[in-house]
Image (cartoon, rainbow, N blue to C red; front, side, top):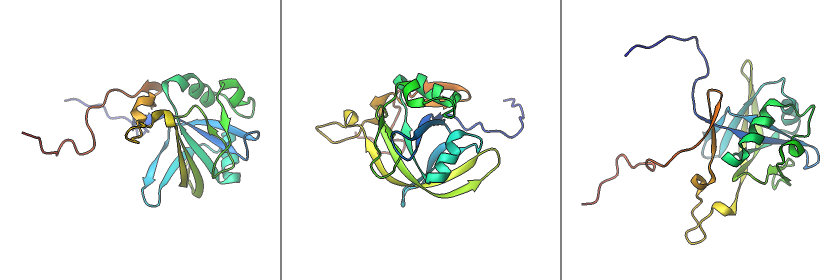
Length: 190
């Protein structure tokens, strides 16, 4: 099988397309679209976002040392893209996108009411990397939309939300489930 050799780059796809909210209150906040985000530790729960220092939200996050990661859905795709190409220096992204800021629970910045899952974070360390700086953060709490919690079982069905993913310049919704963790080694019933 033939392969082309390319210069080093960032080709680990797909990634979640999230909206990161930051600021000190509902009235003094901003949104930034981030695809460079992920989990880095389970106990304590920790995650990261990587942001260019030139972005408006960078200084806000660096100043407050907190942010909220809001997962996005197909119905939020236009707002997610818009918030990623326009600057909070020039626009109120909340009013322009039609998204609803809700007062944070353990952080000053709001979360996005339309998000199926919001993760409130406190920055523990900023790592300078080059074009982006990585904000390593402790997860303070998770706000789960009750619409996706099965009332009979209490199971959180995040897969029902139509989550948005980003892959090499394009947005996608996640597809059908093909298995659950461990299904490849699970014993089959006779």
